[in-house]
Length: 315
Image (cartoon, rainbow, N blue to C red):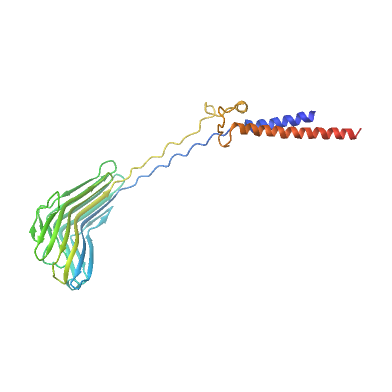
């Protein structure tokens, strides 16, 4: 019987260890990663021409050029824009923009994105009309600002004087101004075209849509858009600090796991109550402990019977 008692005691110890091991507490969650600051973006163009030139032989020649186009951070000064247009003026460079001053500036950092354009005493030409100025304008400017902690803004300063195909024009503030010139074509001029959202701002001082039929220098038609003093910006994104790390409660706090002996006696408050990390409930743990006892008891009975049989043979 001493063997039975020894084996049974060992089984009880093993069961107690299996049932009474403290459940490990969940590890502390990693702190949420912070988001770094993102600088804004800005762009500026002193003057841009996007035209489709149709020659007398029905060949289309695209003209897509710009004066002082910059992306943040950059600055460019230039007062002359020329381009070679195939089939026009014998292949010689065509002067498209000529000004006293032309400047485009774009800046961007983590606090502010801004763009500005200044144009002074400028003449804008199109292929096929070398002696007629499409646009003549005095000083004009455009500015866009996108601060990280404020509302984006866009502002335009109108030219004191504007001519379209040699005619003095007063530009309307609420709708495009339409200009017809006999034997040449039509021009629509829109002043201070602006778009502002919660994160972006854009403006063009002048946007000119043209449909010309000059029949000069081998040019049959000129269609497209001329944009003067165009700016845009996108506001920076502020940095987001990482969330504070969640620490595990100290062992002495009320949230610490109970001693093994107390856990051995504890019964889940409700059927199906989950135990951390195991995915099992209290019934599963008790059943496991009972299974250990049954196995240990069977081993003890077998060893006792074997001892008795050996003792009987030696008599």
